[in-house]
Length: 284
Image: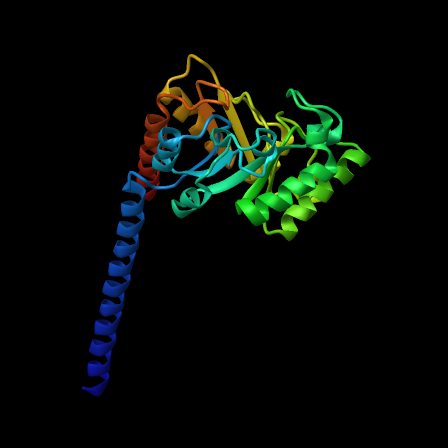
């Protein structure tokens, strides 16, 4: 009788344990799905916006809530070059950060101090100037990271020394280091020895096959693309395509970096919906 009673109690405890585990699992699923269904959920895109900052533009970015926003700040290249003309740089950095958006301030390496595609003098992309920008963006602007534009895809020894010095300084200040080479193929040195956390590679993303470095390091790579003919669905499809190939971040627009697409909210909404639908299918 005593043995029989122990067996009954054991079965009851097992049943109770299964019920508790089931309730816990259901609760976790509900929490995850409820977060995914939120219309304001952070979206893993790397918004790149160098345009004018005003209440309308900043409110729009706050509504779409990209995970990262690459922008001009007061103590970055264009903030300093334009002086006190505040429309050229982001004022509300803390407001972005309060919304969960990581702010990445822009500078240019000028291909390691040699040249630039922009109309700026060499003094604006010298090593010492960029070190000053990084220090001031970290301490005064309080950005989350630095976006180093115009990096050579395959830097030589001198270029590597220039880039490594910037990356090391940024890391000592607690910043994310994000370089832009602008091409599908580039030297993995940026990750293995250069100290870069992320690299922006393709700037003409259209769903192409990945290069070897993109296949290996996709989890630390971002891409972007634009075409005046794109609509929100095109942008969403291309972004999902990049994610499916292992690329960490993608941003697609119908305009260059100086403007936001009129359909950017629809684009982000489609990404949220399609991401949720994919997760539901995977859970079936």
